[in-house]
Image 1: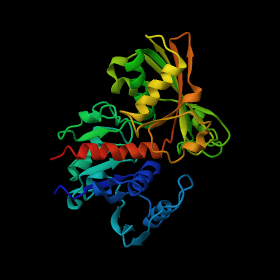
Image 2: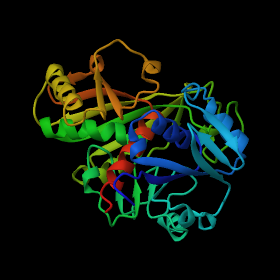
Image 3: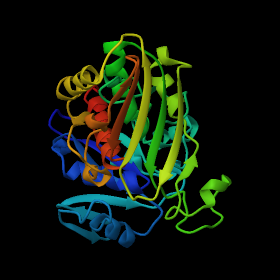
Image 4: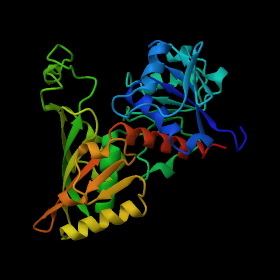
Amino acid sequence: MTDSAPFRIAINGYGRIGQCVLRALYESDFRDHLQVVAINELSDIDTIAHLTRYDSTHGRFFGSLAVEGQSLIINGDPVRVLRQADPADLPWEELGIDLVLECSGAYSDTATARRHLQAGAKRLLFSQPAEPDVDRTVVYGINDTSLTESDRIVSAGSCTTNCLVPVISALDKAFGVEQGSTTTIHAAMNDQPVIDAYHHQDLRLTRSALHNVVPVDTGLARGVERLLPHMKGRFSSVALRIPTMNVSAIDMVFNVRQSTDIAAVNRVLQQAASGPLKGILGYTNELLASSDFNHDAHSGVVDGGQTRVTQGTMVKVLCWFDNEWGFASRMLDVSRSWLQRVK
């Protein structure tokens, strides 16, 4: 590969994150570095094309899109559409795939991920936390510089770890975080039914997403420990699903060693958002609601007006995040950061 040729990307699983990754790539300046050349999705190509053109959350696709045989032609770029259930049957070697973005959510183990490598892909990036034995779990802006050429299977974490970990990191450096507790207030997802129906072994997930606030299991505390090992055993997390289509929030409570106040906490977060975490962490004092963050590419945006401090050492922060677009944007950041280390 020459220095000027973009890396060749395949998207495996074309659901919410897969679709947003493709759209975000075409709305970014990354196309000189990354080119989607294939999508593997069991749906038919006409449905895939339709769901790319029209999106209830993010609007119409701004570019041109046509179907030619078994390829999408997106802004003139051919994207081959495949329908293979077994990764081992995919033509990744023939297509020269540098990186598979594993967005199906169907598995999280390295054994299945390796089937993509056996099919000829050079590397794979999970769009979920995956199993602990992946080569590396990365939150962009925190530990992406640890990526190496020898890494083959990497996880980009989750939308929630990408929102939470930058805030913990900034506050820990400034005040020393002793422990914390988080409540994720998450938009509805496709593992919930529209009306009450048998849908899942978790009986709460059999209840209507349109009518209920639903508590769900979350591994966010484990994700924090994986990315910030010195925080092991210091965090607990719960999560609620709410009847909105997109944009979520994390209500974070931290106990800190160094006494502080609201102004100092907000100053640290604002400086992080305008400095080392620019483009990753956002900050606002505007009086906004969740829909104002739809299509926002930040991993999270601190709502400065909601910061609270109790007796100097208990800090409460609210952080908004577009759980689709923000995370898809980080998938692209990690992809470029990782592949640029490849010689």
